[in-house]
View 1 (cartoon, rainbow, N blue to C red):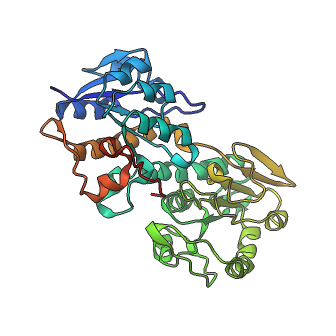
View 2: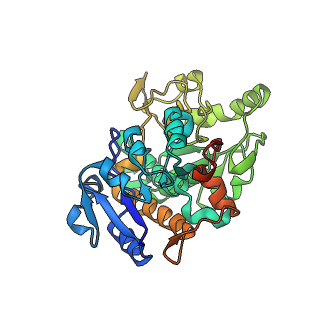
Length: 372
C-alpha cells in the first residue's frame, strides 16, 4: 500500500511559504507516494492548485492529516490538526519546541513521530536537509535589500558629470550562512564591506567574498558551528574595537542567532547613539529578541537619525524561492525515510536520530529539543 503524504496550508499570520512545491511533489510521486494537498496551500507562494499535478485536494486540514502517514508543514500545525493525525504517523516541520510546549504533549499523546527541521545536525552529510541554512541564505540576501531601501544613499561608487559619490560602508556582524550571504550581496551591489564574528575561522570566508574582517582579538568558537557566550571581559574588549566600526558604517546588518535561545546583544544603545546620521541597522535576530538593544521585533523604528529594521520571518517575504528550497530539504529527508516504497527510517543514522523530536515507538520519553 502506497505511503500517504499530506501537505498542509500554513495558517500562522505572515507565513506565506508552502512545504511542497509542484516539482518536489512530482518527485514524491516517483518515490511511490500518494500525495494530498490542502486546497490553496501554495497560493501565497505563487503556486495555484492547478499547477500541482497528480495530487488530491482536501479542504479540511483535520481530514487531510487524519488520513496521512506523513504530514508536511512549514510551521508547526495547530494542535487540533495534530490531534487528528493517526497514531504512529509522522509530522515534519519546523517546531522550535521551546516555544511550543503544548505541542510536545499532543505529539506524545497521539504517539506521533515528529522530525523538527531545525534539529538537523550541522554535519556535511545533512547539508541537503539543513532547512535553517537554506532559509538563512535568503534572509541574508534580503537584509541587504531592506537596508538599501531604508538608506538615503546608494551602495556603489558612482561618477557623474556633476561629481562623484562614494560607496556605502556595510558592516555585517555574525558570519554564519545569513551573514556570508549578506556580505556577498552587499559586495555585488558595490558597497565597501566589513565582516565581524567571534569565530576567527570565518575570516577566510569573509575575505573570499570581498569583505575586510574586523579582528577584535576575542575568539569564542562554540559547538555545532555556533559561537559560545562571551564573558563580560570579552564583551568589553570586543566592544572597544567594534564601536568605531559600527559608528563609521552606513549600514550594519546583524545575524547572530541560535535557535531556541535569546539572541546575543551585539550593539548597545550607546553605540547606536553615536552612529552617523542616516545610518541603518537591519537586525536579523529579531525572532530571538534582536542583536541590538534598541530593536523592536517586527517593527522599523527611528532612534534619533538612525533607522533600525527588525523584521520577522524574512524567508516568508521570498515565499516562492523559500518554498522551493524548503521543499527540497524535506524531499532529501524523506528519501532517507522511505525505502522501496515503505517507511523504514534507520534510527541508528545520526541525521535521522538527531532530527527527531519525538518517536512513536518511544513516545513515553519525548526526545528533548536542542539547538540544531
